[in-house]
Every structure is written in C-alpha cells, then in structure tokens.
Image (cartoon, rainbow, N blue to C red; front, top):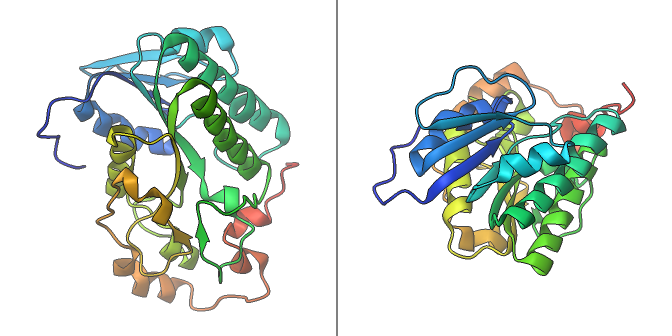
Length: 273
C-alpha cells in the first residue's frame, strides 16, 4: 500500500463499485486515503463499515438502486460487473445494462469522472508477437471482452455527448505475483494498480482515455504512448519473478491458442458453461 497523499484530499465522496471482488477488496483500504468519504458498493454483503466509509448494496442492472448509489458522488472507480468469461445473460445484465445504468445515473446526478475497469481481453485476439496500442481496433476474445469493448464505446459516447470523463483501464493480470509465462507480460502489481487508479482519478484532463494496466515488465505486448497524459508511472516489474515462473513452466506449446494469442486461456474458454 502506498503512502497517503501529501496534498489535500481530492474528492469529498468517492464511489468504489464491486468492492467485494478480488480487486475491489484490494482497492477498498487503499482508496480511503484519497477522499473524505469512500462509498463502497457490491451486490452482496460487504461486512463491517470501516471509519470514513459508507456501505450501500446495489445491483448494476437495477436502475433505481444505481440512481441512489450515485447521489452525491464526485468520482467513481467502477470495478463492478462480471469479470470472467461466462454465458451471455449475466454479462448482458451486469456489463451492458449495468454500464448504461451507471452512466445514466452519473449524468443525472452530476458525476463527472469515472475510472472504468475495462480489460486486456478487449484486444485478446491479437497475437503475442504483436504490440498493440490503444488506438488499434478491438479484437475481443469472448463475450466478456466484447462487453468491455461496449463499455469503452459507452464511455466515449458519454464524454462526447455529456462531458463525463472516463479513463478505461485495460487491466492485465493483477495478482500478488505472476502465475505463468503469459503474466510476465500482463502482470500488474497491487501497488501499481493503486498508482494507475489514482493517476486516472487525478489527471487534470482525460476526456475518454484508454490505458493498459501493466507494471514495468520487460516483456510487454501493449503500448501506452497515447495515454502518457494520464501520468501513470509503474514502479514494479514481473522480472523479479521470471526465474521462478520459467522453472514452473519450462515449456510452451506453440500450437496452443492460449500461447499464440494475448488473451491466453480466455480465447478457449467456453461462454456456454
């Protein structure tokens, strides 16, 4: 966890959706340093309310609950929704209908900055021998990646029409350490995740900006040249884990689609259960 900011708090009330998810749990104690009040939300119980928090249960697909959730909110870190390849119906409810509800509530309640947890799976069907920048066309690797591509387009619409700024974070693989060779390229440390989110919240002007969420890894498939104005500077690297990862996974099957395409196992995951 990073040190608290030396400058005055940026936001009176900051909303974290999906606070009960893997990355939401990691961000919840970290984001309190950047606001007076941290409102945390999930569709199910979040446990005890910590000092300086407000806890609200809400389902993304419930329009009325989202309107109430957004009231009085200055900025949003949107980590909620389906985060794996699944059948279409739950993805439609959370990642499509839920995104529209979130942005409509932001428009009606006057919230002007959203940090959206998109995904590297928006471009999962680019090959691992390609370097992708944020201006290249999406190549989603499944229903999940497709829903995140929709979310980015929705963010672009709400910026162009209603002036709601968004930074879409195409998050790589955010874990305590990389689990396999693919993650040597895609790994995002928890501290760098915090740096990325805070940079996205506090950059003076963002419009709608797409940025890949990765640490300072020696191997990378992603080029953030077009997002330098965000000011994100990763400090960690997967390379300290390289020897251990390669020892655990000494061989790669060059005919395996998961080893050919950037989306890894998601390019083979069945959306039909």
